[in-house]
Length: 83
Image 1 (tube, rainbow, N blue to C red):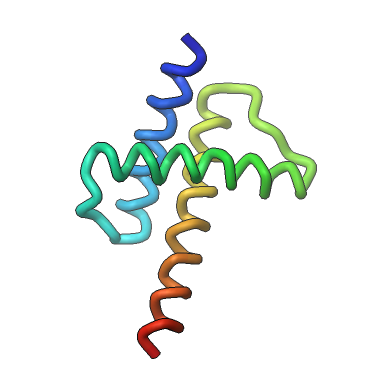
Image 2: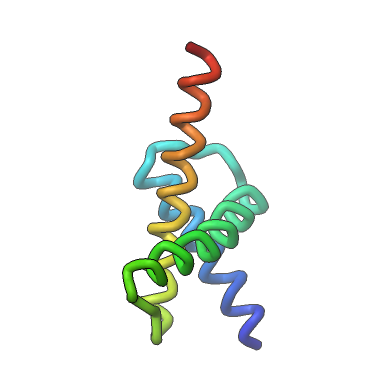
């Protein structure tokens, strides 16, 4: 059951990050992948700050922040690659 919640939070976080960063068009699977990787990245970043998520809302915020950081990093790499 926890795995299902993890996937649902990842999907929501990926969609939210895409809306916030104005980068849509990934679809259901793309949003899910972005959100799951964002959850891992967000957990790592929040851990460095000594913060943790103990609720569903906290998990959603953590995953969304991680997904936004991932999208921002990918944009920076794209700009460097394209010159």
